[in-house]
Length: 520
Image (tube, rainbow, N blue to C red):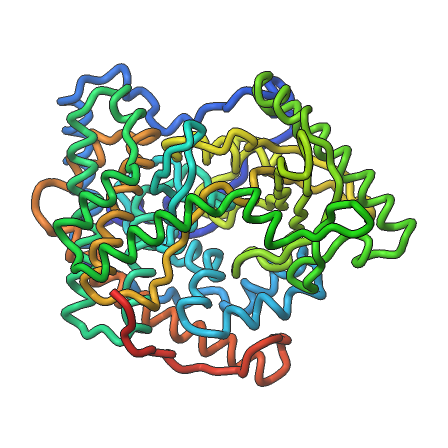
């Protein structure tokens, strides 16, 4: 497709090159420790009428036609994907990096989960409307799951915000859509089935954004997807086996709490409750380091908790003060996060039957920052927390952040949340086309709600329009990018075979990794 100069100006941050970082000489995080902070993504929207905002959205089509979102071709100067991964690994724990590569080489979908930095560069070179919102930054389908609200209701929402940052709303949509294609390929779904799933996912985003555009601001803020809504959706769309599986997953999610974690992850030794080591995935501090070093790290983690506590609201601070730390361990998490520093702390309240698990996870600069611009927050943990609070319909009551000094003398940022609190995650490998289609629609609607909270939902909805032009374009992009993902997956496999990188835990492979259909 031939580009106009205006279209080129709407690509990424304007040129497809890295964005200039904001100056961060002032530590604005310390101005209001407990404040959630704002994200100026709807600049001036409150001063415009709905009609003016809609005209703004429709006008953006001239610069970036909706059909242009089908475009993807790797840039001639595209960074070697293995080099991108190696740059990320340079700041991570070296003994854990081979585990990360091993997990990424299990399948193209597992690779994609760890390749957010690779895709960020590619997305920065794609057409854009110029409309921005708070992004998840890594909106693949496994980052949508069941979560608990503070009122103890089970909700469906986005879970992971490590890469959150304001940016072009299209980037999240394209990452979600591509994850659907990759998961569907691995399940052996044919072209028509994949096309239906992805178009349905994007259509759901578009239709929900239009619905939110017609709602009052407060109604948008209060919108959420609870368990009753999920079961209602399933009743009309899923077969009996799928409905039964959903009910089972809802029940399992309610059981995934600190009590369940204590039963699974702890033991009593000499009358003291402690975490059970399962190295390298979960390693008690005393088993990880020699005595003096373990004590030093324990002191540093207690300092981290003390500083983090000050970022909570006073009532949550009071609640947390009822608990005392009894054990600590290092945890290996996820795929893309493997190698980042992550600590699990076991706290006990009234007695051993009153456990609380907190997870302190390292927060690095968002992979979007080189292309979307640096965060306004100097502390990366605060960036994560602010983004999560802005996008989620209901958040963890213990969500907070802190910066701490490590034993190596390097300052690192962390965010803290509960390890388990009614969390339920899907297994896409068990889905049939109908089930994945319903799940994709739910993810698309959830992403629209998250974007509508911070972006100009009226302008975005007007840009998208009533027709399926954008749906079809993104479906084409997702297929093209899934091909690129397979090439990048093969490149990492080749690098492992050549011993350029070390992968642990899997046989090196480079194929598509399709699996037979299972479940519903």
